[in-house]
Length: 144
Image (cartoon, rainbow, N blue to C red; front, side, top):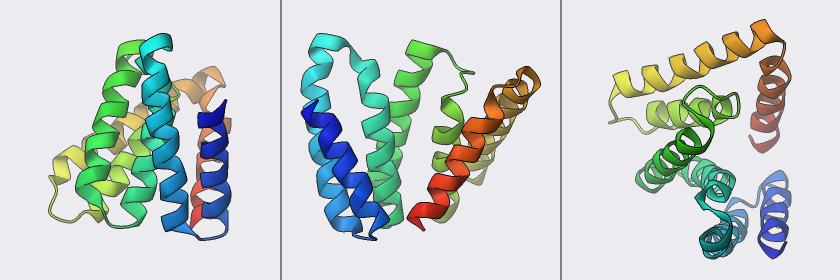
């Protein structure tokens, strides 16, 4: 519960363009979630890792962000499978960060973005993925 409150505070700070303060709250959430993961499983770390990585990427701290994105992807794939719809936003954000990070492998960025497209298209065919993709676009616009 407390970890979730820190996540919410971080998201509110992002909406107010207080990125550094948001990062502090999200890092606290991640720390608390890490402690809880020993009881509830590592899958609970996917969201805090992803949100923290998003903010680190926004701040230009790409190496830290890449490590968190990769860990979140590993955990997501381990618990939900490689092609789960919840991975779309994570893959898009990771791919964008790879592109923005500059000196990264363009092939890795292209692969992450293509995987996101493939999953979204499969989910759209089933009628599932479109609303999630719309939510992700709305979120991206809100934090810009």
